[in-house]
Image 1 (cartoon, rainbow, N blue to C red):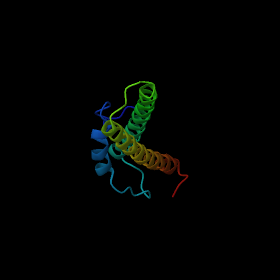
Image 2 (spheres, rainbow, N blue to C red):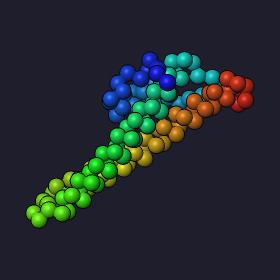
Image 3 (cartoon, rainbow, N blue to C red):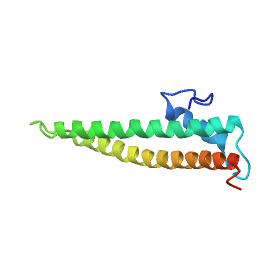
Image 4 (tube, one colour):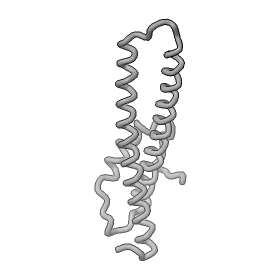
Length: 120
């Protein structure tokens, strides 16, 4: 869904924190207004997009590391340390993005059910 809250499609890590502050705590006893629904939908989309980008990058780094292992020249230990730290950080980011996407999708699902009269 294209929403007005989805402004920087190529910069999810930049836009997501602002959206999360805008969303704050959601009162699930009330339906979302359009602005909040747009923000929640945009946050879910950004989390998914960032997650996919990070996973693709991690896979690419893995492929490059496999290729580097075939070289006769040794790889600098500091470079390996830097790549290891980056991969560890990216995996934590992916875990956070999965949590955000799941939470936003849950809010949207609850909102749809509330509109149909199925949730209280």
